[in-house]
Length: 196
Image 1: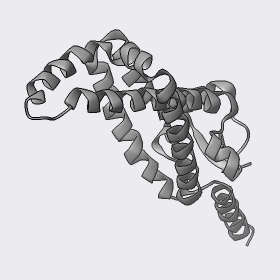
Image 2: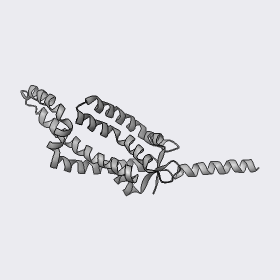
Image 3: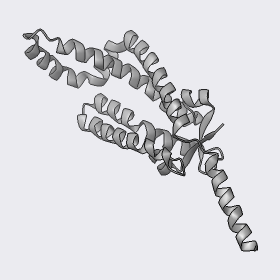
Image 4: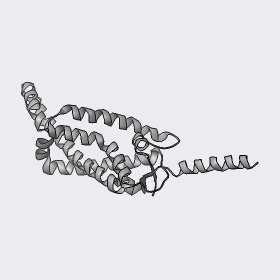
């Protein structure tokens, strides 16, 4: 009888532990709020400092874009102008994304998580230590960081690695549908998203 009761209590405790974790829906809402924030402030930064940021992050690629633009100019297509605008927006949003990386590393929350009252914690649900928060934040934002580093040093393969990692993280977001409600970067960093 006591063994059966112990088993019931263990099962109830496991369910309660996972119930305290935040699943895909609220996390997706947080992501959408972050996306909106990054887009708005990224556009603002790109309009203020876009030319400088394009030169800083994409300077090595501009010669290739200019050459392609000259080839397409005869057809009346402003390839260089379009690519420069895309790069300005990309650079502006990347700067804001870096700020989100820092914010999540320091506080364990992005803007969307703050609004929705959720936070990154240790698997136990207790506050995560600084090292764990920084590891999780780096894993989540590594695609942006690697792409910017690749642009800064002029090595496009680093940006390619960042893009591949971004694909892995994207697929890993759907792991939040699992019983443990952890994404791939949560699993690696040994974290979960919990109610604040």
